[in-house]
Length: 153
Figure 1 (tube, rainbow, N blue to C red):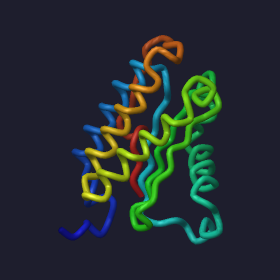
Figure 2 (spheres, helix red, strand yellow):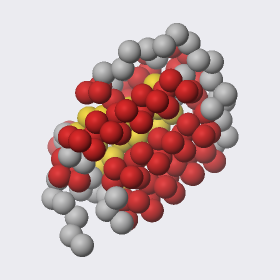
Figure 3 (cartoon, rainbow, N blue to C red):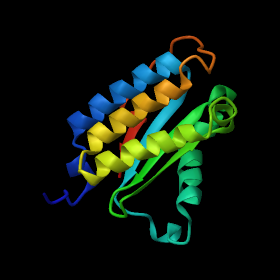
């Protein structure tokens, strides 16, 4: 089976809405602030950046570092490069075992190889919940905006 040419074809609007609702549910259960950013290509000015550096740049662009207690998590997907990076802020890293990210990466790798992008991202978000449940203080309920949780460009 041939992969879609663009991320927007692999993750249509309806899939993004379902994923955003899963993210909102996990955020409420854990106290984390999770964003998924799917990009078709790097910008020309980003060609020299490592995947980690690119994730850090995207993390800052999305202002996830401004989350209370530094509980931001980014899943960055570079669709045409078939690469991803899971980046958690210091508040998250201080509370979970580093192996947690390997669990998330294994899920993404398995599903992405099969072309199951929505399923992979949804299961990865649920795995993040598994690792974070009960480890972060949960504050007051927040209002979520679907468009803010998943970006595709």
